[in-house]
Structure formats: C-alpha cells, structure tokens
Image: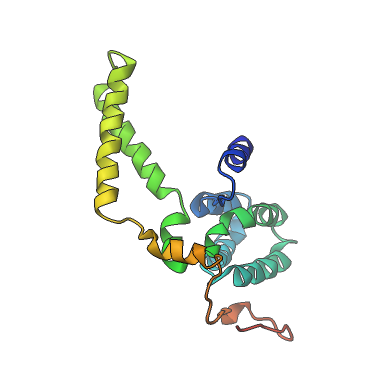
Length: 185
C-alpha cells in the first residue's frame, strides 16, 4: 500500500487516507493470541465507534496500556494503523458509516467479476471494456439519481474549516480508570 499512498499524496494533495476498518480489525485479531481475540475485538470496535478522534485516542492509549504485555504484536499493529483507520472520525458523523470500510468499491468489483464470468473469454479487449463500461455507467446513474451521500453538509463543513461541532464527548464507563481525569466537552 505504500506505493498507492505515495501516489495519492502526490496526485491528490489534501486528501485523507482512510484504511478499511473491517480489514484492519482482521489484521489486529490475526495478530492476537486466541484467548484474547474476542476481548480485543470488542475494545477495538469501541475505538472505531468513538464519537470523535480525541475519545478514540483516549481509548487507544487505554487499550495499549492494558494489552501491551499480553498481546504485543496486536498492539503494535493497532498503534501503527490507528491514524489511517480513524481518519473518518474527522468527518461529520453521517458520512462515517459509508466511508469507514471499502464495502462500496468491493461491491462494484464483485459485480464486474460476476458479469465477466458469464462471458469467460472476450473476443477482444474492446468488448471487455464495453461490458465493464456499460455496467459502470449504469452504476453511476444509480448513484447520481439516488444520493448515496448528500455532499451538501460535507461542503458546508469543509468551508467552515473542517471543524467538527462536538457538543459532548462521551467516554464509555468501562474505559474510565480510577484517578484519571476525564475531559467532557
């Protein structure tokens, strides 16, 4: 992914890199000892579902402190990929569910594969491009007609400097340690 990230940074300056949370979670769980997999999965899910980035970072630090000795490789994976997997928390809440994973692009790829499997062998390159192009045009019309994401709020948010209007940061009771100050905004 390093080459892809570098190309995006060069060609699409100012864009945010969002790592698929589902695939990242699988990487973390794969690096976790079997006895702790459910527990760590639950903790990381809590991090991903945080109200904002500061809460996610608070929960990350707490998780790292608690599991670093028992699952060091998993905690290394979590710490190294945290920023990429939580970039979506900087966006308004209504966009997070659709943009936190790669489901939408995976669905497009599956549909292309399904259609090309029927034909199996294309007579020439152009016929393959026509089939895939026709599907992508159809898919574009679906997304253009029915708004998958209403970008009006996003553009308004971006114009305001990209600042989230967080009313309250809620830290789950399970994550509060004794004698640790908790900041509620």
